[in-house]
Amino acid sequence: MDNDSFGEGAGSKRPPRDPGTPDFEPSAPAPARTVRLAAGDFLLTVNPVDGSEIEPAPPGGPAAMAPPVRRTAAERAEHERAAQPPVPPGPAAARLPLLERETEREHIGRLLARGRSLRITGPAGSGRTALLDAVAEDCADLAPDGVVRLNGCHRTPADLLHELFAAVHHAPRHRPGRAELLRRVADIGAVVLLDDLEFGGAALSELLDATPECAFVLAAAPEVAEPAAESRLEEVPLAGLGRAASLELLRRVAERPLDEDETNWAGDLWFESEGLPLRFVQAGALLRQCDELRERLGDEPGVFAAFTPSEGAGGAGAAPPTPTLAQGAAPAPLLASRLSESARKTLRFAVALGGEVPHQAHLPALIGDTHADTAIGELLGCGLLSPVGGRYRLAAGVLLQLKEEGYADESAAHAHAAAQHYTWWTGHPSVTPERAALEADAVVAALTALVASRTAGPDAEDTTGHPSAAVLLARSAAPAFAAGLHWGAWERALRIGSEAARIAGEVAEEAYFHHELGVLALCTDRVDRARAELETSIGMRGALADKRGTVAGRRALALVDDREKGRVPGGSAAGPAA
Image 1 (cartoon, rainbow, N blue to C red):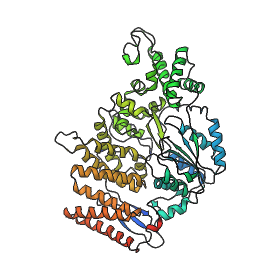
Image 2 (cartoon, rainbow, N blue to C red):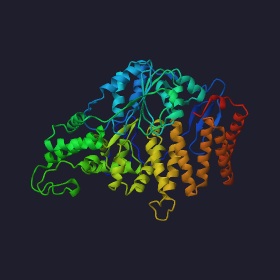
Image 3 (cartoon, one colour):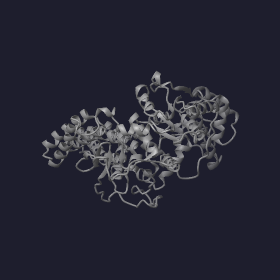
Image 4 (cartoon, rainbow, N blue to C red):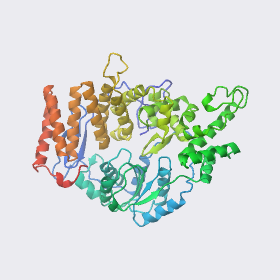
C-alpha cells in the first residue's frame, strides 16, 4: 500500500513511489465496482450501490474461482513482508539490542521445540513485540509452515483463524465457510506469534482447539482475561529491565555516554518506571534532541531563550538542561514540541483517531505537505509510535499525555478531515480492496470519532454534519472491506454507519446498512441475525418505495428461509459463526 499522490498538498506534487499506481486527483470520478466472492456455501456479489447480492454456490463450489493453494516458503515470506508496517522514508534507524531477555528467549525456544504453546504477559512498553521479533528469528525453521505473525488488536478468534488461513494459503476472492476453515487450519503446522492479544477464556480455547498442529506464543497485557485452565498454557512474565540494562539502553538510544547528572536522572527514572524499556527509549530521544539543539544552535547568547519554562530553560545563553523526572515520566509533550510541524500535525490526527496513525502515504494529503510522510520516521525515532500488525499506533501512554497537552482540542475537525479523505480514497478505482483493508483500523477509528462527536459540521446550517460524513465514509469503505475479505472491519463499518444514518435521519442509507448486515450474518451462518436485519431493511425500503432494494432484500431473505429448512448446505452443524 505505497502511494504518495493521495490529494493536493500545499506544494508541488511528487510522483508516486509505486510506478504501477497512477497519479490521480480527488475530483476524479469513482465508478461503482462490483466484486464477486466465494463465501462458504454462497456466491457473494459486493455491490456498493444497491446492496450486496447473495446466491447459493453451484454444486462443487464456484467453478470460476480457483480453490485455495498452499503457499510455498518464498510466498509465505513475501506475504509476511507485505503485512509488516511500512518503512519510513530516510535513513534506516539502528536496531536496538534486546537486553536482559536471554533467559526468556531460551525458555521460549525450548517450549516451542517441544510443540508447547505459551503466553507472554507484560505491561505496555515492556518489550513484548521486541521479544517476539527475536523469537521469530530463532524459530524460523522449526515448523513445516514456518513462522506466522498475527496481531490480535481489534480481532476476534474468527478473524485470527481467517488471517492464519490466508497466511498459509493463496485464496484470492475466497473466504471459506466455518467447516472448510476449521478443516484447513487444523492441517497448518506453524509457530504462530500472536501479539496484542485481547481475549482469553473460552474465546482463546476456541482458537487453540482449532489449530492443534500449531505452537502459539501469545503476547498480552496483564489485564487481558486469563486462558482457561484446560488450555495448559505456560505463563512467561516480562518484567522491567534492571538498572544497569536500563542505563545501557539509554546510552544506546542517546548515542553517547551519560554524564553524572544524566546518570542520576536515569536512576530516578528507572525507579519510577520500574525499568520499562519504552521509557528509556523515549528518555534517550530527549537527550538526543538536546544534543541536536546544542549542535544546531550553539551556545550563543540568547539562542535558548525561546524555551518555555516547562522545559527548564536557564535563560539567555543557557544550554538545554537535563530533563526533569516528570518530563522523563511523561515525555510525549516535550518530545513533540521539538519535532517538525508535520510530525506534530500527524500526532493531532492520531489523537483524533484514538491513537491510530494514518499510513505515511496519506499524510501529504491530510497535512498539506508533500514531504509529510517523513513524520513517521521522526515519531518512531523518539519512541512515540509502536508497531501494531501492519500499521503504527501511538505508543503506550502517549495518547493521554498529548490529550493533557491540548492535542485533542480540534479532534472533531481532524477526524472530519480524515473521514473526507478516506471517503474519496476508499472509493477510488485505483485503490484495491486489499489496500483499503490494510487501512481499515484508521478508517474505522475515523468513523467512531465522527459518530461520537455528534456535533455540527463545518457548515453552521448543517446540524447533522459529522454523522452525515460518517454515513458517506461507511458507504465508501464497507464494500471495500468486504471485497478485501476483512470482514471484521466490514461489520464494524456497517454497524457504525447504521448508527450514523439513524442519527442523521438518512433512512435510505440506514436500510442499506441493515441489508448488508443481514447478508454478512447469512454468510457467517447467523441465521436469526440475518432475518432480523433483512426484515428491517425490507421494511424501510418498502416505505421508501425502493423497488430494487426491496427485491434484493427479499431474495436474500428467501435464502434465510432455505437455510433454516435445510435446502441450502451448511447451517448450525458447521459450528459457531465464522
